[in-house]
View 1 (spheres, one colour):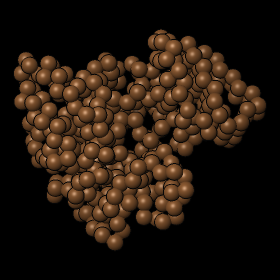
View 2: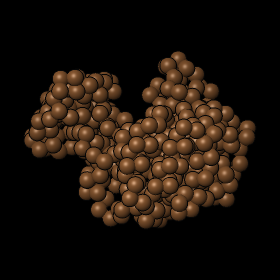
View 3: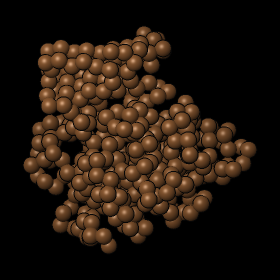
View 4: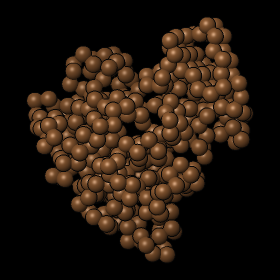
Length: 357
């Protein structure tokens, strides 16, 4: 089994700490080590380091190598431009297929937090077992609230099986896009819906077959790229072909159409670390619900997140805020507006303030 870790995200909701050359996957956000490093570490010993493949853009190569110095040349697959997750996974698949087309690919985001490593590895082993049999498998998380920021998986709990380690696997009825609140409340009450974790398992041969069927233009480009691997022409062919493909997600381009898709309902302490307010769900808090990092003084405050980098940051008498201080920028917002931090980045881009991006 190979791990394919998608590490190309921009992490704009974690501005001002997250920047273009140092996005959130390269940062320790509510964790001891950078999120990417923790993603790799929790795979061992199930997937050894030599079978880890990190996919990201050229601007992140130096940053990835800095946090993962033992990642060899084969461990880093560079996508020359952003084209969403289907081309990203397809590029990794043609590289892995040259080594072993029947190898299982565990496709994982680089920037999630998982509290229960043993439970995660148990689910991973179960997913790999079904993937070796030719199925596509995903991990689904049991919803705890009517979340509108996640996609959902409608699981058929009447069509289930157990893997050799006793893990339940259900047939996927359908993938559902991010719903409005009323629909999310109905999904929560129904009990048959799971949050889509964005983690997928399949053999290289299976995913390339489905890409050929559902995204033929991408498949044709991937074949040209594969033919150029380990030749002097590879950089030019990769740049030309990758730029020519349509930007499309793996969920929309493949998963919504594929057959023999299964989901494992997983309880692994998962958090997608989607914005600053998410730290309240998994990071250590004080007796007043404050999550604090760096040189700070927090007085008479509750349910507030304070992240200070490089200079003393103080808050007094506040409730429910996010306060992030870096040497060149400060963010203050209500916790329930943390999703909107990316809008700040959009304004800075419009103004051309590149030094803050």
